[in-house]
Length: 112
View (cartoon, rainbow, N blue to C red):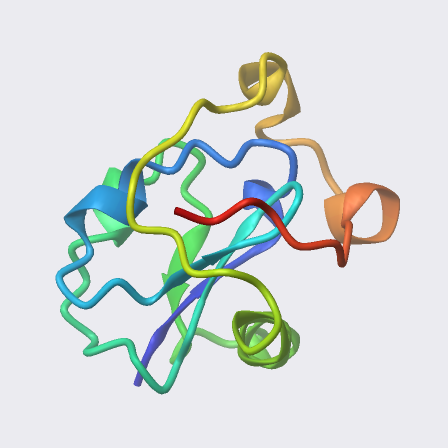
């Protein structure tokens, strides 16, 4: 099992999860974070820290595409270990549906 970052992180990217991760397995894209499933130790401390409730265990049904997305982009994007600033419109974007299709960016973030 691993945890994965899902749709609601897109354009929310609060980053509260980053500082609690004991193994630094978060990677930063331009407008979302992902978890490297090979580095995640399944401790679950990140899940309750996410204000957008975008982090879920991969054992939940229907998360296969998110496991693939997290795996792919954690290999391409820079590691992030320090919480940054959330986007100004993060609260307004939380809960918006179909964010993957509408807003996802494959571009890397800055990392830290």
